[in-house]
Length: 153
Image 1 (tube, rainbow, N blue to C red):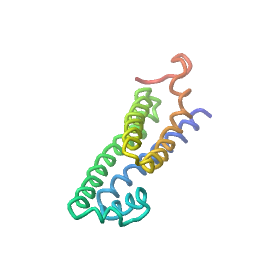
Image 2: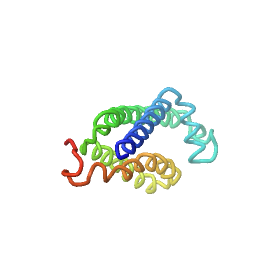
Image 3: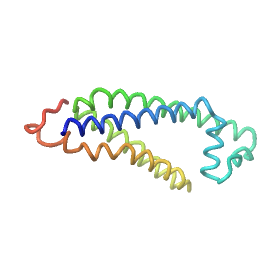
Image 4: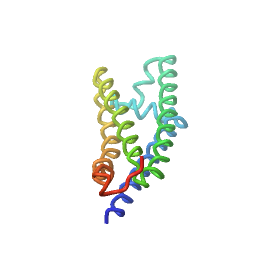
């Protein structure tokens, strides 16, 4: 039963990492759509950012692409961790997911709130829940005493 539960959450994590990869890729390959999506999210209008002027709009589009590249790369690494080490009950893999998740979420939320973009906090919260659910669900599998479950470093 425990093996099936681990498999379910491992596949869940792999799916979320693939969603992350696709999101990052979309920011890179569909920059206008990304700009309009964030404009709608933050300002309630898909074209509001376009009113900032050509230079600002171009820079914002560039930042979305650069952000997409970082998200894409992060997602690929997490996909490999989910597929192999996490599936093999590596505590290091579980810790890598947790550290990566909190290393992104906490600072991003603080920056978003400092600049008044609560909408980004809402978007972050969706991804956070999708990632933290399997970590919470598998905590006992990975972290019970070593004599109860073999775990790799």
